[in-house]
Image 1 (cartoon, rainbow over the protein chains, first blue to last red):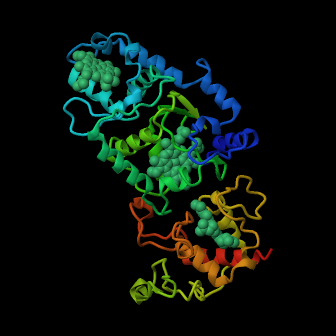
Image 2: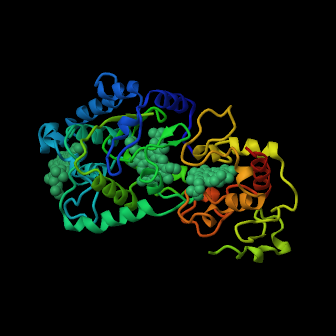
Image 3: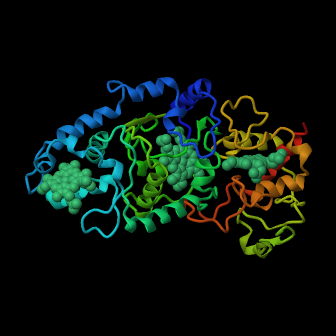
Length: 258
Length: 145
């Protein structure tokens, strides 16, 4: 499994030496933040030390930049970026005439193509991560609040199925790790409950900000399963299911992870 | 129980001689015969168990391999496994742990069927070869206490 660069192993040691007892009552929800060492928690909490804030600052500059054939900035239509408060907490969601729910990055790209008349940004590009980070940051500390939209139900159910399905050469399901064994150690790593509330996240192993889809892709590769292509419906379904599981938990983005 | 089924025996055609998978026969909760017809090498088996990219065992298990500092706690300690289980039981456990526990998280190391969406690089390959399985079984059998 791709869970062990040297830096990661070292940080894992810090975690195992400093983490408090991990026993948790069944059903108690817990952010992956609490599985980190105090030094990494402090890094996430401090706006100066949190490397993810660099992407937030870039995104803020991009928000005001005119783009595309329409020569419009995000601000031209939306006003200050602070008007985005609460938006990230509702995604993935149906948007406009789109026949399927979209996640926040996809929603931003719809504004690129439909409203700015510009090309969509590639997944995991610095630009898309920066805009996603600045929009998500406006919802910091707000509870995850999936919309009560009955059209979402089949997609959430599809995500739940994917979450409990064994796959890959190692024949594991997400739930076997993140439900049945959360809080236990997979080698040096504490298995988190897999809440999406810190994304996009700065991961030291990546030396970069990364999306929730990138994280899910990492887990699939660890299971030796064929990862879905970025933007695939399966990821959006999993993101929807994870959001429904995390309903009410406060957004922490941008998080930091080893 | 499915135990006692003859597994993969149909693969025993000369044309498949180079196939890393070998046919094996399950008796009760054991595979009594070596997958290669030879005894494995416990020293090589120890190295496989210790290697988190090859055996992966210590991702989940602890074991008497002190130089590997980051061992998992999802599974029983491997120490004493050779005293608790026969060689044939250890072989079946590593080949296909679902035979012991249908909801196990232990991967099936020598099974290539009934798996979903295996990554292309690993498609139709068992996690360990027959030789590697025999080495691991030989090592586990030495862990008497």
